Image (cartoon, one colour):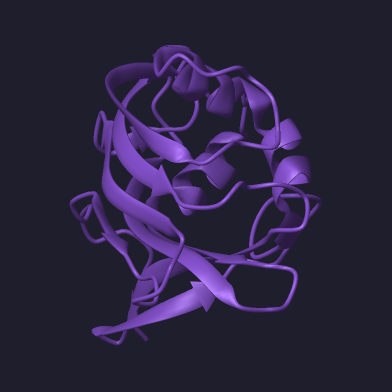
Length: 180
């Protein structure tokens, strides 16, 4: 039996997967370094650009589908990550998600001259070289080895009526074993 968890890291990729009439438009997302070090005490470096044509508030839900990319018998497959607490394939109200990830979102908003509050008003948001500090995590070495690999995340933004207003898909290489 051939089961490979990590057979090399994929390059970081993103795409706007939204509908033609979306009101949340993602133009750019870059995160460095690659692979993304989960146990690092050093901040990540992010560059992004997006446009909000409507305010994001708690009427907006974010449906996150988080998957691990693996090779089984040479065939690529995606294993969904369950929702555990607020991590994994979960559904969130936007401002609740914002509050849970405030340390990530605030530097982005502050860099573009906006207040660190939710709701987030309409406008164009763009900045380069934003330091993003991930929460400190100390994983047992076996978990870090198994967890390192390639992941895919899709986040769909849905309004109160159930209409999709935005979507982003990210493929990211993750290294949970390196500490620096």
